[in-house]
Image 1 (cartoon, one colour):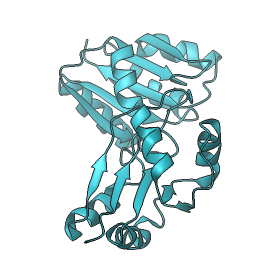
Image 2 (cartoon, rainbow, N blue to C red):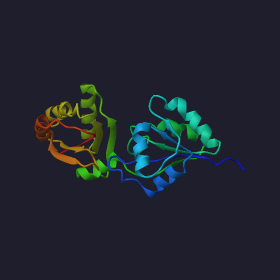
Image 3 (cartoon, helix red, strand yellow):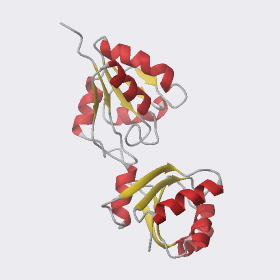
Image 4 (cartoon, rainbow, N blue to C red):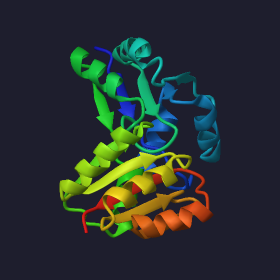
Length: 226
C-alpha cells in the first residue's frame, strides 16, 4: 500500500488560547511532527492543551523555501505534518504559502483547517461594510508607500484592512488625517486578549487619542470611505 501522509495547515489562537477548534487539536495530537514559525511560541499552546512529545521543527520566512521539500518528502513517506504559525492562519502574512505551493507541485495531499483570523475578526468588530474588503498585509515602513496603499484602499470603496506596528500607528494616522480627513478609521488592538479594544472615528480623533495614549500590542487598522 502506498504511504498516505499529508500536510495540514492548522490555525492557532490569535490571543485567547481557548480559541482553537476540536479538529485542530485532533490534528495536532495525531501529527508525526509539527512545523512551527517559532517553537518557543508553539510549545506553551501545546502544553496548555495537554499535547506533549511531538517533534517540533522550525518553519519561518527565512527557511521555508529550504525546508518545504523536506516536509513534503516526509509527508510523501507517510507522515502527517501539522503546520502552525505564531497566531492565526498559516500563510496570511505568515509562512505557509511556499509549502502549499510545494505540495501542489508534487501532488502531495494538503489540507487547510478553518479557524481564527485577525483579519476577519477585526473586520466584523469594526462595524465597517463586510461585503467587499481588501487585505493589504503589513503597511510599509516607508511613509510614501503607506500613503499610496491607504489612498488606494479608500478610493476603492471597499473596507481596507492592514496590520500595523504600534510604533508607526501615530505616523500612519497623521497620513490619514492629512490626506483623507473624512475617512472612517478603526484601530483594533489586542484582539481576543484581556485588553482588547476597538477605537472608531475619524483619523484626526484617533490621532489625538493615540498621541496621548501610546498604543501597545498587536494592531489591525481598518479604513473605509466616508
